[in-house]
Length: 318
Ligand code: FAD
Image 1 (cartoon, rainbow, N blue to C red):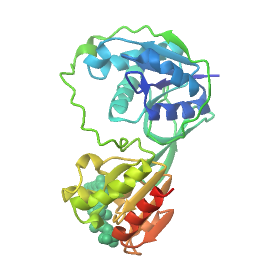
Image 2: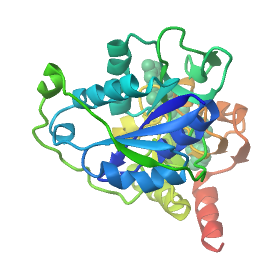
Image 3: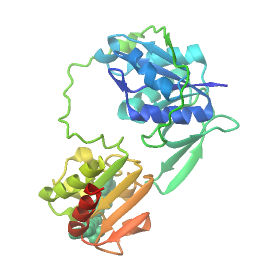
């Protein structure tokens, strides 16, 4: 069976969820071989093996933390040369997409970004993407070189699939460009205790209907009961009610959670662009004609100031 390289996104050995989702997709098209780099790389092996990695290629060096993405591209290129994989899968984070693009250029391959699904095809893996502000779903495959594919978080379930996960040291020679851009400092964002918006399994969003920064407390209360991230429409962000980092949509973040709850959001095309691939969509809106109701699985016509607190209380009792 062909091997499929999976780039491991981890923090000091703790594997992030989008990588485990990639292992699920990788198993559909071959045998997952994980590539873990930097401090804590070896500690990722047990988790990766539990989720289907037949092998874990590791390389620890200070360069991965001290410089921007090029050392990681050098390492992935070395892994491609060592394994000759059927595809390389990378999580669709900002860093992941830069790594994937640079790698594709290096190895002369085609690239598909922001896939939301992946299946085996006769001539290589077939990726599904959601395009043109989510108006169309396309299927495509790379026709040149080793396919490099980035996959959006929450595109697949995390599945337990015990495998050997044998750890092997990857031999990497850094290129002349590897040390070109040095990281001079890192400022951790103040934690809200909520999951990262793009990775959360549940997102609760508020729009203009929330009618004020202080009222976002009711959106946050529901989010906290569900262990969800908080999102906002551009109208709410532009009004200064919620930070831009939480904006969902064409000019904000793209989310694809299992459950998306939109409160006081009309469902403009630019908002849909960032959430339409969510698995289950719920909307609370007092206007029965609001366009958001065209795409929901469940809709509540009502005042969010009545409905959202009731929902929060109901969930509390369970
Ligand atoms: P509105 O459209 O004003 O809708 C508010 C809704 O709240 C209404 O449906 C109303 O019935 C309902 N409501 C009011 N009060 C209550 C209540 N008490 N209870 C229940 N419901 C209530 N938008 C984004 O969201 N993300 C983007 O990334 C984005 N990018 C854009 C990029 C471009 C180039 C452009 C031109 C626009 C972009 N927009 C984006 C803006 C987008 O077109 C809409 O203006 C915006 O999404 C509207 O936000 P909203 O739904 O919160 O507000």
